[in-house]
Length: 350
Image (cartoon, rainbow, N blue to C red; front, top):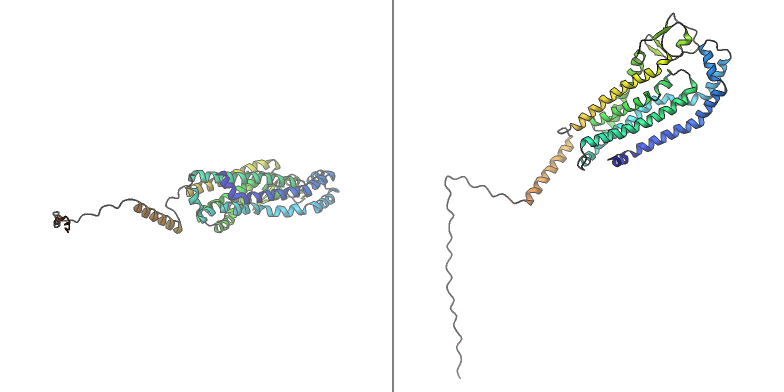
C-alpha cells in the first residue's frame, strides 16, 4: 500500500523537494549575507533605540538596511498566504476525487485492501508528509525574516512560524480532501478549496486572533509597539517609534507570541479533525451512494456474472403442467421383425 501511494503521489513529492530547494538557495544567497549585515551594522541595537523613542542616527541606518535587504523577503512573504491554498488544490483535491473520478477505487478495494486501511494509509502518509515539509519550510522562512523586524507579532513572522503555518497547510489539504470525497471531481474540488480556505483563514486571522486574550493597556507607545496593537475594529501591526499615543493603548505583549501560536494551531487542528472525520464517514459509509455510471457498471457486471453461472450449471427441469390428474404417457408398439432364413447354396453336378 505504501508503494502504491508513493507511485500515485511522487509528483507532489518532487514538487515539495523543488520548493524546499528553492528556499534553501534563497537562504544561502540572500539570508546568510543579510544576517551578517544585521550583525555588522548593529541593527538590533538600533531597534532598541527606536523602541525607546530615541532614534538618534539609527533611522538612516535602518532605512539603508531595509532598502538593501527587505525587497526580496517582502515580495516572498506577500505570496506565502496563498501557499497553503495551493497545496490543498494540488495535493488534497485529487487525493480522493481522482480515485472516484477514474474508477481506480474499485480496483483498490478488490485487491485484499479494505476501505479502512486504504483511507487510513492515504490520509496518514499524505498528511504526515505535508506536515513535515511545512514545518521545514516555516523554519527556514522564519529564520530568513528574522533580521527585518524584531517584533514577533508582525504578519510575516506570526503567519509563517513553525506552528501556525503548517496548521494552515494541513487544514487547506483537509478541506480539499473533503471536497473531493463529496463532489468526486478534481477541478470542482480545487475550486471549493479556494472558497473553504478563505472562509477559514480570514475569520481566524482578523477576528479571532486579537481576541484570544484580553489585551493589556499601556501609555507608552514604545512598549506597545513591541507587541500586537489592538484597535477598535481589529488589530494592527507594530508601530515602532510612534509618538502619537492615546491615553491607553490596548495591545498584546510580545511574550504572548507562543501562547497565541498554540491557541491558533489548536483551533486549526480542531477544524482539520472535524473535516477528516466527515471525510471518513462519507467514504466508509458509501454502500448505496454511487454515481449513475458506477451503478450501471455494477449492474452490468452483476448480469454478466448471472449469465455465466447459468451457462456453467445444469438447466432446471421445466415445471409440470397444472392438471387435476396426471395424464398417462402414450405407449408406442413397434412391429416385430420377421426372421430371416438362410438357405445353403446347391452344388452343381457334372
